[in-house]
Length: 169
Image 1 (cartoon, rainbow, N blue to C red):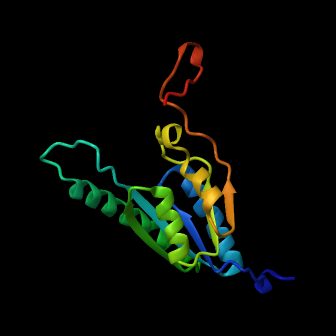
Image 2: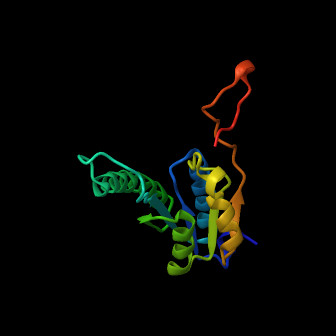
């Protein structure tokens, strides 16, 4: 069977992007699958909303979110151009949500995604130790097939003598 005749039940691949090296690995894998099977890619970036965080009065929450949205849109424009050059149809969305995993799960349903491509580690920082991994929740709750890519855990910024890493919550 030649590559030109390969078909896939996956017509739309959703890729959550946090702009970490791990999420770029997920995008690379999704691009390869999309190119091989003629699927469309939907890129999703969720800006976490933290309503209980204190910020100076001179800075509004809306200004912080708008800056994050513009930065994400700018990065997505680069990704969309690169994927378009490969002949891959791509759309993207930047959303704001209190529950990143919930926002991703809602996007799967809303966009009728046939496949989710996600990695084991992103830019979560202390969040997974307190609330659980976003990927862990998605693996348990997603109602579509998913490709889970194991990626290296980001190095901790906390160091102990003799060069051993220590994880802090």
